[in-house]
Amino acid sequence: MQIIKGNTVKTFFSLLFILSLLATPASAAVESSNLKVTIIETNPYPAKIGEYLNLTLQVENVGGDKADNVDIEIVPQYPFSLDSGANTIQNIGVLNPGRTATKEFYLFVDKNTQKGVRSLDIRTRANKNSPWSKKSFDIRIGTETFNSKGTVELEEVVSNPQIFMPGDRGTLTVTLKNTATVPTVTIDGSDYDTNARIQSAVLKPLSDGIKVLDSPYEEMGLLGPGDGIKLTFNVRVAEDAADGTHNLELAIEGNSFDYNSKKNIPVKVDSSNIKVIPSKALELVDGKSTVEFDVANTHPNELTSVSIKPEAEGVKFYPEEYFIGPMDPDELFTVEFDAVIDNSSIVNREYSDTINMSLTANYNNGINRHANTIGNLNLANYFATTESSSKAVIAGGLIVISLPAALLYYRRKKQ
Image 1 (cartoon, helix red, strand yellow):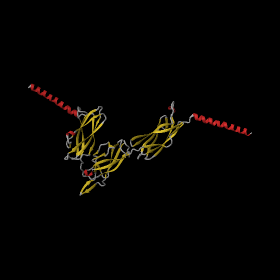
Image 2: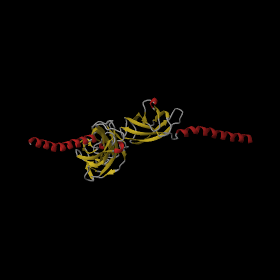
Image 3: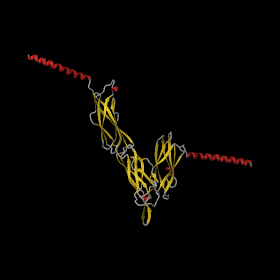
Image 4: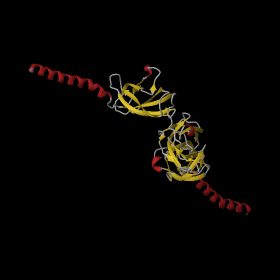
């Protein structure tokens, strides 16, 4: 009997040890790694029942070491499915610290699913020998249906800055309003309230020139008749964005499918800036003069904190920088600088006839600081030399002496 008990105890602890070994990989697989995954676009949003869903995923290496062979995997579960199991994993390859990469997955939403929010698991690993790291995301499917009859309309769009320059960041603030004017309405003998629901609002660019930096708004509650709400989206204009109007789409999910709408949001981009033009001859006489420039704002909206800074080797300018402040579109401002040759810089140096000069215009467009430099301006340099001054003095003295001598000669000849 004691032998049986001893064997039973040994068997029990052996099973515990085996189970602990089996459990270790599972726990390691869900531990966080140096890879961060996010969903940056869901198209369409929300997902439509019985249609394909395009997910754009971003993987970022937030660690300090290089990830040498990154994989990203979608683990589809009802109501989502993929055409083939081979499409569940996509390879990114090398991902250095601080770098990001994007991948697209196409999922089908089952035609029998119900409206609501469903969970989707996404896994990443740094290389083939690393454990998988899993993160779950909520995917919204369909539109909830409510009996309310309020209608949400776009009332106003405010852009800051009003007109962007390439590379600018800024905000687009949209005001949505419930256009109903009475608290209830009767349709076919039934009474309905006129509250409006905004279940979601997403701003999507229609071109590569502008990127929306914010996630969609969700579940913003009720808007009573005549009530409004402001939604602000942060956007960034690409450095190579073309001048002109770029369109974005604001997709609003309302009380039901019948109350969903899409609004066009125009964003203007213009690369024109501050122009600086000499308004009189650029020259130094005896190492000093006053130089003058016209400053014009050629951008279509107001620019702020405008300043002009001149530079030329061996020359000092006073003031060192001229601060103008805000400038309206097409406003012209004239600035003057006293230019003086820095004597300490011309020891053992001969100046040429011209000095290369440049001016830098600094200004703000909204929150964005800009600078553009006008270079290769020729600042003429003239000196009244000591030799020429001496010749003038001698010539003047000879004239003074020769006049009495000429008079004396004339008198003697007359006698």
